[in-house]
Length: 231
Image (tube, rainbow, N blue to C red):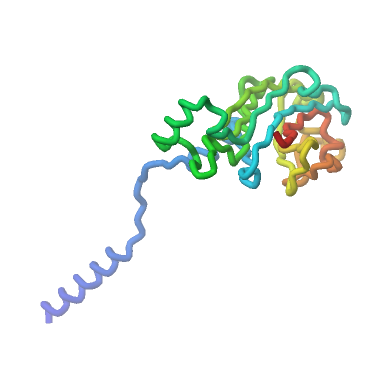
């Protein structure tokens, strides 16, 4: 009887140990750092331009600044624009270099004669200082440029002197060649007199025609975008 009792006890303990919940430390992966980076002001927004891959286009990066709804700065009219093509063809190199690229298989798509191709626009924001944001606009494999945005402090107590800004991407479906395409808005929080708070509420994506009610409430914001033209 005793032997039978011990057998049952061992079976029970084994069952409990095999079903026990476990908590183990693991090595952090890159996505685990994203909330931490966002919390201190680092953000990245990406936009797919893979549909342009069959032809060569010139992509011009442009930043526009608005104050109380009025356009006060346009980088394309102040000598600060930056343009780059979405792809570079092997035929653009000297003949000797072309042969080396083909023989060593260095191109992105040798059959189509593409040396390098950018299929994604990235906009990264870095908190350089309380009053500044550094914007890095890039097309992977093609190039990048950096801008610095000057922010404005809050004027309402108890937030007076604080720099509170948020971000919203624009909803873009079809590329209209030659037209300005807004991609990202960087804007200040606004004062809600009824609730006596500063806030940054509204659509998760803004309309490309800037008709959002949210934009009408934001006292100071930047619109980061592009103009795409056929080469």
